[in-house]
Length: 259
Image 1 (cartoon, rainbow, N blue to C red):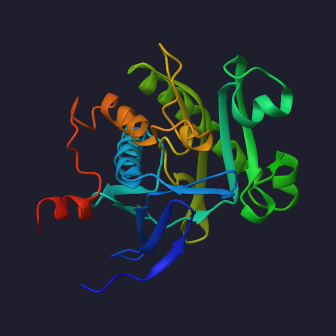
Image 2 (cartoon, rainbow, N blue to C red; image 1 turned 30 degrees about the horizontal axis):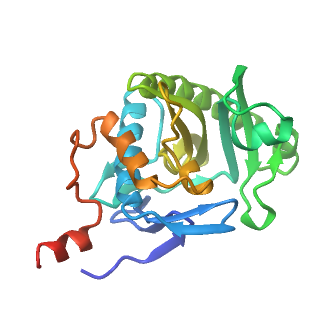
């Protein structure tokens, strides 16, 4: 079977044309980047785990009525998704001070916020994904006021659900990034959740120890990135407890079996 045509390649994923009109195949890479791709590396098996975690979370979100682009997981690294018109805005939901918020405002990392904060960033690597306001979004026509209401409402719903999901397995949801897209039906469009939800785009801390179980381990040279991602998958019931032989890289697995 011929390789499908590549549509787009980002820092962590590749999109290929899908088997049917209006669909794409999303491939999860092991590439890791931080600080707007100024730091680059590889976390072996990360793509497999992110595919599994994100597919699981999107499936659960769909069950509570959150519209998403996810259709189904195809294999270890690929999932079938709906093709959407991506809105060029990264939506960051914050429950606890960390990362850039702590640096910008001088708030000690780990300080619970009095209320959940939603921030918006313009998706442009060349500009460093600058922080923007709803005034900028309206001015430049990136999304309508009605669409922004839908985005904010969905972001809060996702935050409420994820906080409970991770809290139930002893993980504190510090903050996370979302992306949204438009799906069209003739002249009518609606907003749906797109991209992924995984330890790449979430800050996840162990509730008991404060240990970081996310990409901050890569950003801050803490080491143990693979183990952290595996721990999140295990707690969500996606990996067997204590399984050291989980297949995370099919090529390596085949070589080890002499195939």
